[in-house]
Image (tube, one colour):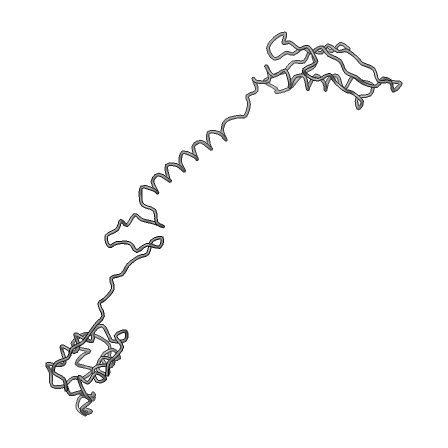
Amino acid sequence: MDLDDEIIDPLFSEAVDHVISSKSVSADDLKQRFNIGYNRATTLLEQMEEMGIIKWAEWDENSKVNRYLIVAQEVAIKRKPQKEPHEHVRGNTSKKGASDSNILGYGGFEWFMGAIGFIVILIIFISCSGKPSSSKEDYCLDDKMAYIYAEKFIFSNLKSPSSAKFASYYDVKSYQPTVCKFNFIGYVDAQNSFGAMIRTNFNVTVRYEPNKDKYYLEHLDM
């Protein structure tokens, strides 16, 4: 009887070579010869019996074991060639001896370049996040921001602030008497005490204090 190659014990061929030179064999003989367990030794004997290599002879009362006689002195055993273990990397079979540095399909050089790119991006991010968007000294030259605060100072001096419509920044005259000081000459339309809309000219000077980051009204004429 032929056994399926897939279920034959890997030790089968070597065990057969051992037993065919003997007159009889038992499970204990295979246990001692190959240093294996009783169940595996018994399985080997059963496979040999199915292939007609041995046959059961008797129960040995002295040793309390089943003994088998060798009936075939020459056995041809066909074994399928063992396939070498292989690894799959990204759908392709890797060759024996391939670099161990391949991880997730990428070699050591790709990982190195990726790490360099990450470090560069991290440095740029830290540099940009640590850089202030604007310095306080810039406000000493920023007349647009100064005009916004000038409007606020004028706004509080109107009879009807909610009706005020100021001249745009581009319609007023402006200059800097000194650093951090701004002068604006323009107009604002607003309602008077009687609800009539009138135009009022203004001449206002505001000063920016860098140490306090604050604007102050120095002069207002309207």
